[in-house]
Image: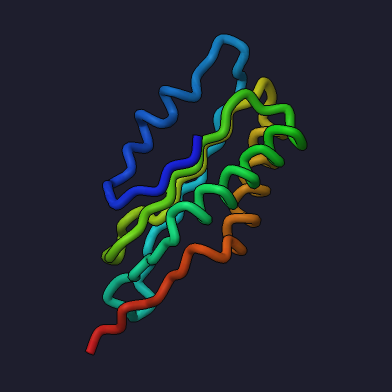
Length: 123
């Protein structure tokens, strides 16, 4: 599933949803706003194009890797240092595919044209 939200991300709930009897590995990636001398980050999204682009990335990952589930949740709005920006959860029978799919999705996510990030500088 692909989700774009202004709400906090419940990582534990997402991991629980990824558990299946035939899953031997769940790999997660969580990106957070880091303190690089900024006050936070503003994330703007064109929702419909972003959901389409993220859906294509998800479908490609499901075809390329032997994974059982893939969930990507991306935040939008004004975020502070320490807030979660994105979470990716991949489940698979074996860890190599789970790791590879998670990395693939994150790499592709960096190029989604309909999601913009701008740093909010402390004045």
